[in-house]
Length: 122
Image 1: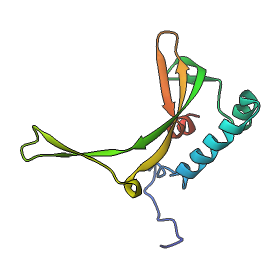
Image 2: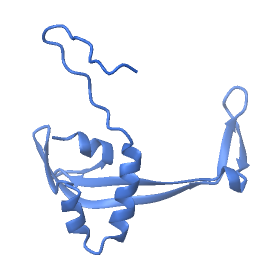
Image 3: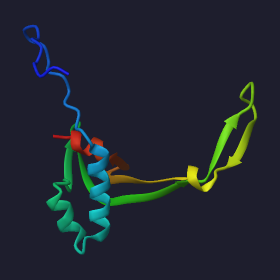
């Protein structure tokens, strides 16, 4: 990988910056949030906004959702895709993960945002 930045034509927009290891940052956030004795202060420390102005609409943070997901089976479609085969997974193939969402209210409905979506808002 070269260290140089290629020259861009006049007026070109810079390439989007991809945050490295965002999944690890999100996992650390989940662990810290669960253990935090004061969740509100933890959110402030993590710079999670309690109010956001997005597309001209004011969003207000209502809750932080952390779901624990465990995949214990798999589906394989049969030829033609109308039916499927179900197989329970052996223990070494079981996957566990957490899903983090920030639920905001816009005055009419709930707007769940992922950690990555929240980080993109300026």
